[in-house]
Amino acid sequence: MRYYDFLMDSVNFFGPGCVDVLGERCKILKMKRPLIVTDTFLEGMKEGPVEKCLDSLKKAGIEYAIYNGVEPNPKIKNCYDGLEVYKNEKCDSIITIGGGSAHDNGKGIGIAATHKGDLTSYAGIETLENALPPIISVNTTAGTGSEVTRHCVLTNSETKLKFVIVSWRNVPSVSFNDPLLMLNVPAGLTAATGMDALTHAIESYVSVDANPVCDAMAIQAIRLIATNLRPAVANGKNEKARENMAYASLLAGMAFNNANLGYVHAMAHQLGGQYDMPHGVANAILLPTVEEYNLGSNPEKFANIAEFMGENIKDLSVMDAAHKAVDAMRNLATDVGIPKTLKEMGVKEEDFELMAGNALRDGNAFSNPRVGKEKDIIELFRKAF
Image (cartoon, rainbow, N blue to C red):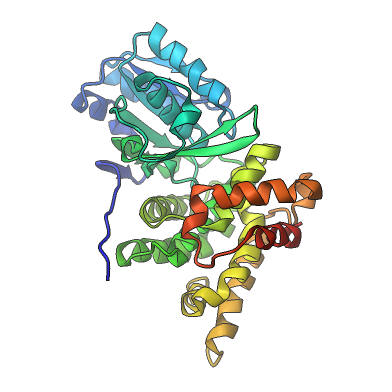
């Protein structure tokens, strides 16, 4: 027997139109001049997420500054560039608008603003000693869950390594998941982020740190993604599918924030650092291969996953039903247009050994349900290749 803790944002708004109260929530938090952290695409979108957020701030009389230099797989440089704007504009708080890259970039700026030394020195778990500025995260994709997590994932461009700063101090004060902000997300990004959310749900459900509260969230997330990702990719204007995917992403984020993840994410981080590969695509390609490797660790849970994803497991043995889960993961990825192999994404076999060693040192590796060695991780990369 053991005890568990459960960590999440103080306040979470979700559902169509919820972003309208952003300005009022800033006033409650006594934000005087927040730094908006986003990218140029979202900032330039007519009637897009940034414009809607700024409208809410203006109505509430909140002044702001903008940093629009967010990149995919945010780099250390992005955090320090944002910090310069934060200081020059005399900001006192942060609002991140976008997907996981914006949220991680914003958290990185908050850490840099309140901690001395290089950001890489804070890689690890609970290394932060000071409170961050108040952070509000407005989510625009159904996938990463970063708007509700303690994880700040950054890339060291010099070493080509992704690293994670894990701390309760990183958890945003408020999150917003408004599906109306997600209607214009392209099909490819919808697919990649949706598979990222599925990976969060599955890895947290089978994690060695799983607990009953997180299981309930992960189970509902798996069910929602299995039935709504395909229609969301097929028609981005499908409001019900978008709404359900937003709920699923939120639930999966809450689950893995507490139950942690596994080898899929540990390996995907290496692909992101080494090749700047989109995180959701990396997860989606690796997920069936890694979970097939994990099947024997908890076949009952994998059999449950098959059922949650709509597979008929009647009259099957537990192990046969567990294999159906892997089939369902692979079929969903194929149906939404995810590349099938790492080779298609430009990965090189000569990097397997380096990435495998780094994956085993990644913080996500320690909660994987099956303990592997470097040769096992190399073989998983090879099977996904």
